[in-house]
Amino acid sequence: MGKTIINLKDLFTKGRFGEIQLGNTINEVIEILGEPVGVCDSESDPNDKYNVKFLTYDSYEFWFIKFFDSSKTYKLSAFQNDSYSYKNTYEGFFEKEVIIDTWLFRHGITLKEMEKALQIEQLQYEKYKKVETIYLEFENKSKMLFEYSEDLNSIICAGWMFHPELHFN
Image 1 (cartoon, rainbow, N blue to C red):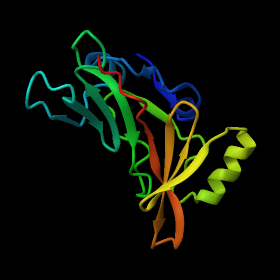
Image 2: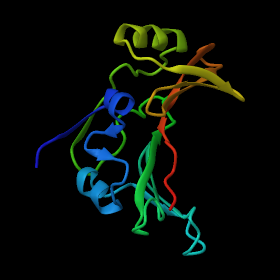
Image 3: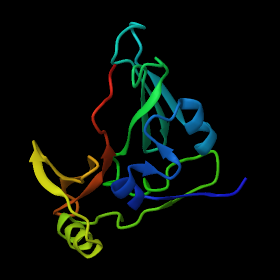
Image 4: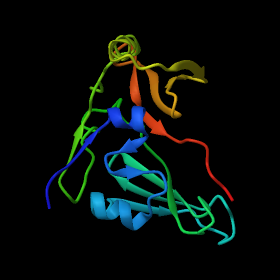
């Protein structure tokens, strides 16, 4: 099987992480990326609509909820990497050969630099702040996160998330 190339621009324009999209099952994600580094299971009551399973591939997280739709099967409801303020968190750890095209992202990119790059890319977003984090939110509800770094004395990119509205039936 060949390499899987994932362009992070697709996350903000198409709501996809390569071939992975909301509604995928755990097995479908594992088929694309390979076995995860970690698996977390928050199921306490089988009928709780907030039951979540997480697959992690180093800094990349995939969240599955049991009641995404009427099937009552765990389906992908969100994914993120909120560790970009640390070096070497862009590649992740994948069993299969996965190449992440980080697009505009690089370690230490500042909010100002990202906004300028997004302007060149002609991508529209809404900017807002919650507590200590600044968010750039795109039309599809994907978000970039920015936080102050004491080491760099600047507001830098801390990662991204795609947590659109959950679909509970």
